Image 1 (cartoon, rainbow, N blue to C red):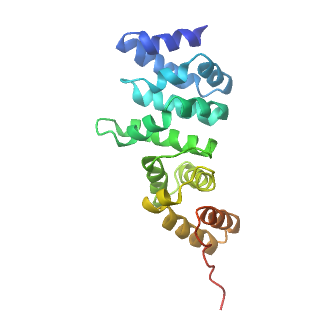
Image 2 (cartoon, helix red, strand yellow; image 1 turned 60 degrees about the vertical axis):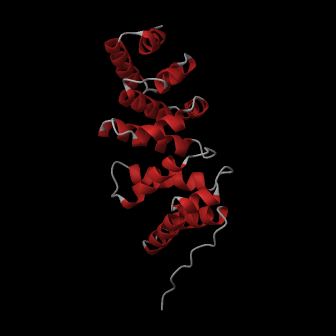
Image 3 (cartoon, rainbow, N blue to C red; image 1 turned 45 degrees about the vertical axis):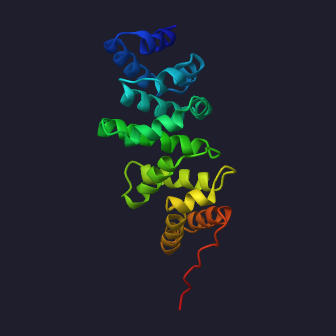
Length: 205
């Protein structure tokens, strides 16, 4: 089928063919059935291994994870977390490429709460807490962080090291003061999961 041909071109074609194939796969991956088909045909491994068209590949992976949550396992198994984390820090990568990789990590962390996130991935998600809301990215980052903090793979020492515990404590206070009690409770649950006491709420005088 057409998807298999595109994957073959993305893997073995000329540089121009690889770029065109990655771009087409990126667009196709916005559809659930197409994303499942791309994964089934070995497309995840090919996209992760792409050297020249990293931005398009990162967007394609993000689209797949967002619309077809079952594909996240393939991304993790193929070493996608390390590749995407590295891409967000790569000096030669364009800002668009870094943004695509970052958003892919957000979607991945939201879909896979047992993900063993590395320091770069956690730091990236935490950095969004200090940014204004933009197309739901801050909200998605918060949800991803809360899911990761309460997962079985969460490491308290790592969260302290990257400033995650302090960030969750600040977020718990912020959301409580804004009256978003459910989110404040989720922050407290995450802190308890990391072996930290719940944040004390301010009481009215």
